[in-house]
Image (cartoon, rainbow, N blue to C red; front, side, top):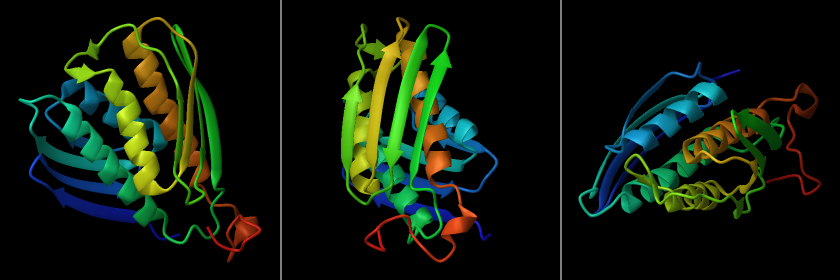
Length: 197
């Protein structure tokens, strides 16, 4: 199977982002967004999904972290869509319930071509490190819409905000790894009664 890779560059008046993604990687990551906790989350996403991910982002973080995180989500979603291609032979659906100490988070996704985010998570602090907790939802919203996928994130339990957020990123990684996995019974086909996704 040939490696499914994508490179996306996005430059605006607020951010400058270059991202490379290999869905069939080993979990190697080089991340630099200028937001330490966000870098940690993207590293966790790459490692636990076995995706190779390089991200170099510069943005107006002197304003706040919003534009950098949202635009990185847009670019990551575009890269996922491009790397998957026509979706021939993939599982399409993926879900994972991930524990991290006190936190338990469920992520379920559908690579349907239709964007939708259901986000049922509660944070008790405004920030973790230099990342605003409200940006977790904005990030996954951006990924969902630019990749054209359903993402459902549900916090089952948890008190520590760091653990809850990290569990969400890792659960998303595991669910995406499952959904993009190949099923030999689907050779030459996509998993849809329509015949296309």
